[in-house]
Length: 64
Image (tube, rainbow, N blue to C red; front, side, top):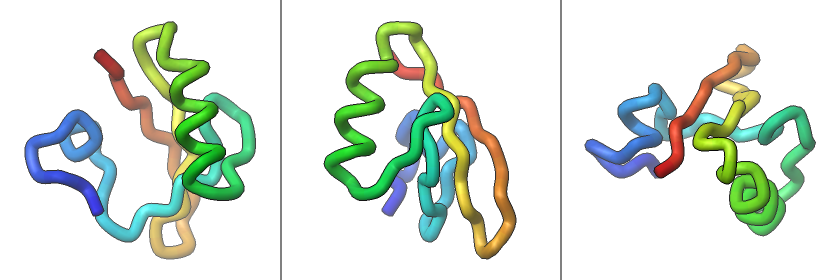
């Protein structure tokens, strides 16, 4: 799910997107995503590699 009006939604993240990498590090499960995003958010943004219906795309997510 992507909360309407959230930072993720405004960046373009859509329901059904699968996060494959955070800042070029493979994500294997939700706990791994949390760990990687917490470690990398100090820079003010996260680079996400997504699988959207079989298409691979990059998305930059600003983090507060």
